[in-house]
Image (cartoon, rainbow, N blue to C red; front, top):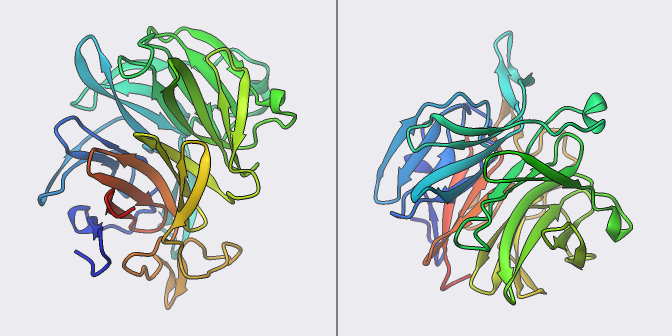
Length: 324
């Protein structure tokens, strides 16, 4: 427990690791929290009361995680871009790229694959790799169609729609806004005034694009305010958005309210960011209680906002929704 009012650091429940965490986060219906092991591959199930367990998977990285319902069962949807930074065995002061095929899957609670989505049959993928960064499922909480939405933020910068059986339905590139998507990193569903809406965190364009299920853009949020929108979560009428460069933005409805606990000034152009140079090489940053360094994934339950951070070792925090 930190001294910052309403903020708790849950990182003590994560394995000690030199892995470069690049995880999403989700909350199960029983209140346990899901995130990726800092080394990737394994799914961590964290009980905030003090226990955690590891579930092996066949994935490289659980970059985005969400829970959803299929056939009356709670299951887990994951976007895996097939990339992570790994410590170089020949030079422990450096991290190198590791690539494997990107994947978008729905997992059973034991980590086995229930459904895998195929890369869409588009010419874009003759030039770009399939690198999904976010996934959302239209289950009974929304319109109930069962459709699966996937943002390919690290590959072709496209947003794809699949049906509940995994059949490809269509793609949007954001061009209706006048500017095509550039790293559509995060995706979120919302039922608003009785209609399904798809929110896209279009990170490089520094905005949120709101679309209907047919891909028609209805409005833009955060232009001129956001600097690095990455992941989104809806809490009643509030939307929280991780800003990778150091904060969490809050919107009340469509109106920007504030940025929560932005980190003390540090340039993301530092060649070691989000980590730091230390004697012997690259190391995780010195993180201050109550200040974000590089927030990545975000989720919520009725009481808490959960945030993961992208750096060596990683951090999992929870913030009281009554305070933030």
